[in-house]
Length: 211
Image (cartoon, rainbow, N blue to C red; front, side, top):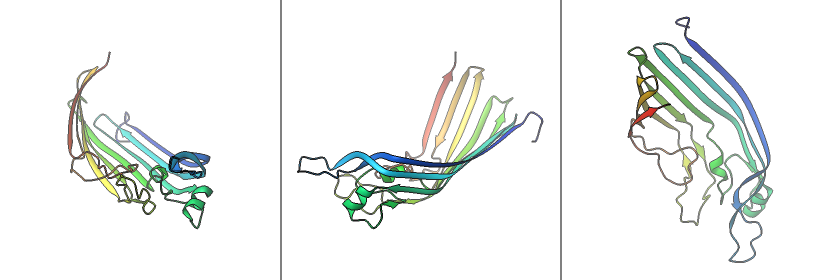
């Protein structure tokens, strides 16, 4: 603590999710003729996801900051149907299966967001910088091959920066101003399916009033 009125919080959590009969899109195991849908929503045998969450917050009369991080140490999706349909060596893997949206459901191993800022003019003005980072991840080879889509085949690690600002005109009236993707980085959201990048450098200005 820098001063008595400062507030600091730390939270650390471990999670271990084991979902049986997980629902996601995949190849239809009962293709009868050309009119049968090739991709359907179906049950996968199991989806395991475990890791750690860390949240750190600090707030004072002059500065504020936070760090939110998720570290995944295990991700495993299992389907005996997909193994048989794709002639795969194993029913389980860490990247998902082709011809479905399961690869986009598996997150990168590291996702971190950090914010640091200052307060000025008797706390009427708050401005800061937000940094967002995600590690890279792999997808199944040719996981949507043969479709009209241009699927992401590999996600690379990405770091983006945003400028944040808020000015309090009155207690219940605030002006918000942001510059998202400050460095105009060409990047993709971790859950994206096709090569649709996030918006480039974007300026936003808004007025917020509460009653």
